[in-house]
Length: 456
Picture 1 (cartoon, rainbow, N blue to C red):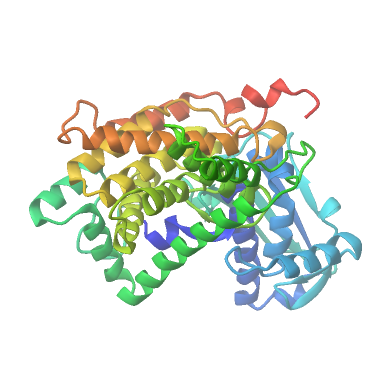
Picture 2 (cartoon, rainbow, N blue to C red):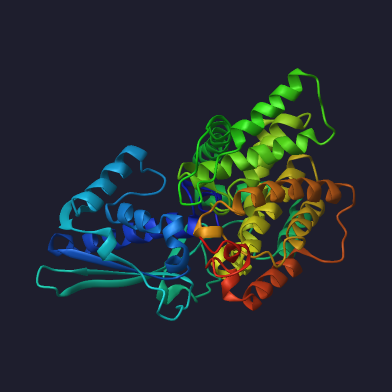
């Protein structure tokens, strides 16, 4: 089972697959050296980035993430101040404290290579890490894959599919199985997920994590709505959330209430999160960084605009969204480099639609229907970031994904849960569509909107 701890991870922007994943891989590489007792022998480290990491890694901050990972930092714990010091040492002094313990000579410009010439490996987000001693002899050579949502695996394990996992009371690998469990037990989707989580972790720990995720999401929205200026990168994109909030507030005080005002607020919430993500701030992968604004904005919509909203409803929202995200992760992909943006914003929309339906009291069948609608209308969406930055069209795309999630939940709750196309069929279709999609539309910035700006 894929846990809420895995699917909703607190980390930093701008990308789960190109920032969080490479940082975790580099950190794991160093931890492995320490576990073998050879860390003190390392005199140099070289890193090669392949596939999508090579093509769009510069705009996604991949090199910075690798440096921080080699220094032993983790996405959930690194602070901006410490990251700045580590990067200054590496770029200005060409020195790096490997794992925070052993100082080696390291120049990111020379020791991290964006290899765009080699054929794309088995997984499009692959990095190779090589450690050598003072004589140049190889101590360790590992290849890791960042498979989406901050998940990383060794390259040799990327194609492995295991049906064996930890024992949980209600294992499921399909939407149909999930519905059957609910029918047999009388449990809601959220209750099924919670029972599984409590079999893996103490109940208090699960509650703390869910509360921390909610607090981080809400805090990210608040920061994004209050921060002005430009986003990093050569596009010099101006933040819009603060100005959007100011205009909405001005309309409210003038008693100008447009019928679609609530949708403007939902878009504002999503834009605020994804501007924070683009700036490298602290966010929650939901299920990825590039799609990090959809679930929080719909959750905020529930909290601020839905009568009867409660903390319990917010927890049920996230637990239900976990089940849906897990189904996509197990049976397709949540990586834009593998299946395009349908695997990021599309999956986030599906998760948010299911979560909102659950929070509003939908039946399990209606929840499954909401999730199906959310993905069905994202099928084929490409991942084509302009300039390799998670900004255009990514930020606005989250706003539209959030609005569509609310619409999907509403449509599903107007029905009785019966529908022609199942969630499982949509997940299978998404996987096949991603496999058929040309590589230039899958986070390489070689097609789609990304090539509409030659100067980038």
